[in-house]
Image 1 (spheres, rainbow, N blue to C red):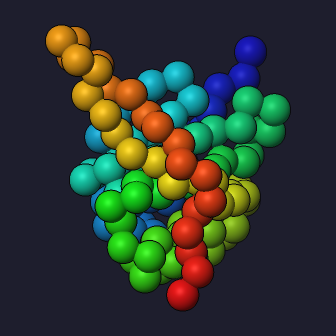
Image 2: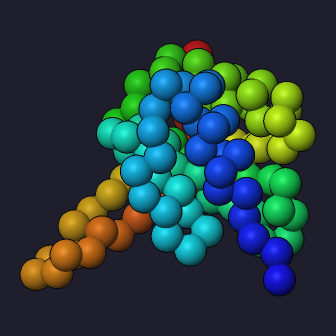
Length: 108
């Protein structure tokens, strides 16, 4: 059985963005302020996708993704750009639902 490289991914996030990993669940990694989340690729353990919160300004998305991509490459991992998302509280529960909204929105 193989495992996601959470330790190296945490280091990539910290060094590339200054943000901390706050939580992980299954194949998802959440970071401070939910500016973005990382989703591991179950078929390629050296690959992950970066999804951005719709509330993260487009200019910040570009900077963050560029830094993450560069640092991941140096660490022997690959990443690609995912989708925009929002987080929504599930009514009457202590659960959060992730709603994906399509394109990554990195246009200038």
